[in-house]
Image: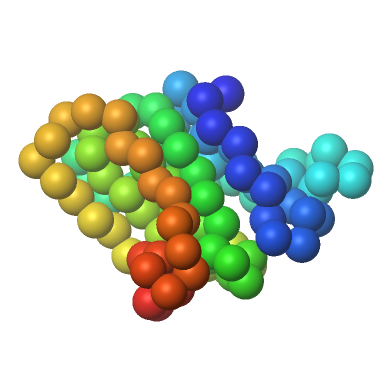
Length: 107
């Protein structure tokens, strides 16, 4: 496991790791709720998930992939909403600064 983020309401947390899978967990029970597998990633996006972050409303989740890709999903449906790619092959960190500046707020 390389990254952990808690949803704003504290009921769910997300993990990302070496296997390239984003997992959503129930905070209280520890039950695995959902996996967002490598197949959800765009072609060419391979490798470990280096960072995860929830939107302020908890409806979206972004993941930074080691190849420089950042992917945003709808937490409830698991649908990919947006993919950002760079030509930089280095660990990609996604984070939320202030809500009015957050990528996650603009979708």
